[in-house]
Image 1: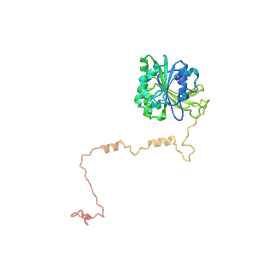
Image 2: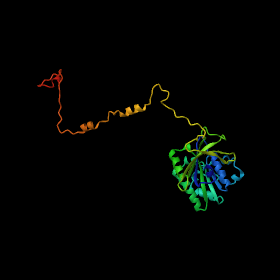
Image 3: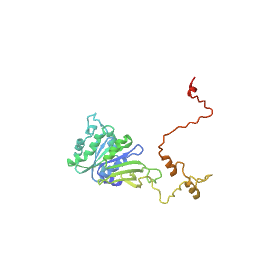
Image 4: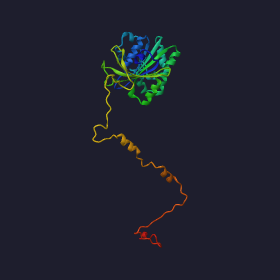
Length: 308
């Protein structure tokens, strides 16, 4: 499924969520290279790293398709110089105007990274721009096929991540490869992909992948959703017997089991006792007192034992 997404198999917002334990910019750059090789214009909104660092390693053919909107050098517009993207310029109208300056045809918008914006702008505003940009661009004759955004998951609260996941048709979480998986490359990782298709079908897959030096994505096999798969010839461990190797017997024979089941429980009453307990008495209740031999009862002063 990851290869299908890189080949343009999904439109709309695509989130690439990484963490401090497993970076995702190399996968982002593989998506950029795949879009450029399909002939699409790639608009990169760069916030996290300089333009030179982002373009490093791309071929000349890919670089010619990139239109880099620099928001790294002067993101707040303090210098007032240049035509770079600023924080105030992250709006639907401003972005559509920047897209119109490029050549016509399908285009991909890349955000590196979406986390930089979420740490400085309200979440509803960011979500509104991401949802409206393809429609507003289409109204002006432009075609934005997808928005690929890098998201640093450990920088945000769970509620923000869930709101973004609900907005995006496709989410790819990049995690380290689990131990015990055969590794053909030291940089191999696992992509947990959730793809919500137009018909309502939701697909989830775990795939083992790596990114080659020329930014080509290479999928290395699929992992089950629940975790690692057991090899077909791997021995199944026997279930431990807690009653084994004891000095006493915890098991009952068939005769002992039948004798145990025949013993009535103390809280189970017979029908005769139930009827006697549930029978309503029509006579008045009486209290009978039989004094002990040591009791000193004075009929004239029954409470004389309370005198001091």
